[in-house]
Image 1 (cartoon, helix red, strand yellow):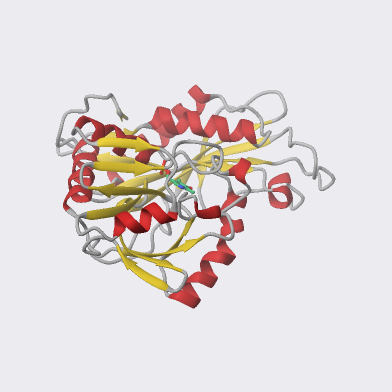
Image 2: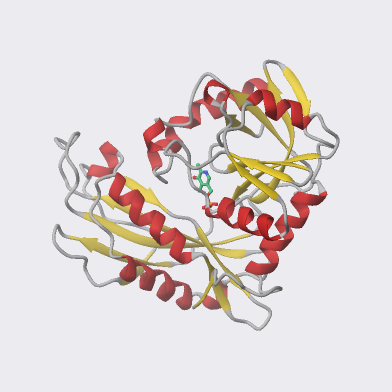
Length: 332
Ligand SMILES: *Cc1c(COP(=O)(O)O)cnc(C)c1O
């Protein structure tokens, strides 16, 4: 199996902002992009992106999941990075047009077509460390994908609880921006090497936050606990979808602060479950938490029944196996 996100459709949609207007979108080869080496993005990280998926339904139709939410977050990220304002309707059209063009190549479920809109500052100006790029470029890449994490998906991930550092600067957490991943990478590589973990669960000052690229959910019996939205972490659309489905199932969904202390206390209970949520990860079980040299198994350490039920509910909706009662799917 090829690694997640390494296969691309040969063309992408692209549009340029010249300081006053967005150009008409074009379809161009996806293997290169012409940029000035002094481009703002390459020096001062004026970049944000989105990740969403298109699914092939049994009747052959192609549906994009929660595109409006992703577009809203993309516009917000652009704004918070002082990039030019995106034209949401034009970006939406770019996404639909390029997915339609490659509709034949959308894999059968459980695979999907991963969609990666990207927005970068293009001013050729290395003196703009403290000034925004007034020109920019937006493009939409497509990548057919299978499962994000290797393995059968039933074995729980191993996470290191990190109290002493953060994933990124606290005011940047809700922006899907390249610099945040670079900021966390050294810590993640170190943790993998020293503790043989899959990911770090960032818990600055004991406050359970998220991993490098997915949100964290604790499922204890009928209760689901996850951090309440604030600027320090990424507001996942999978998180929002799972919370909605959990509420509909009658679960007690609590968006609030979760401390490491409470997490470890609940994790010790035999029916406790934990999971990472994200467009790529979907809902991936967490089996072990490593804290100050001690291993804590979460429940059975394997995929639990509630995580499985929530994941199935989400997949069923995405795949057209149950009614889309929230209007989360857009036909292309
Ligand atoms: C993308 C991302 C998530 C998950 O967001 P979704 O909208 O569910 O895909 C969570 N955390 C981080 C840091 C992310 O980059």
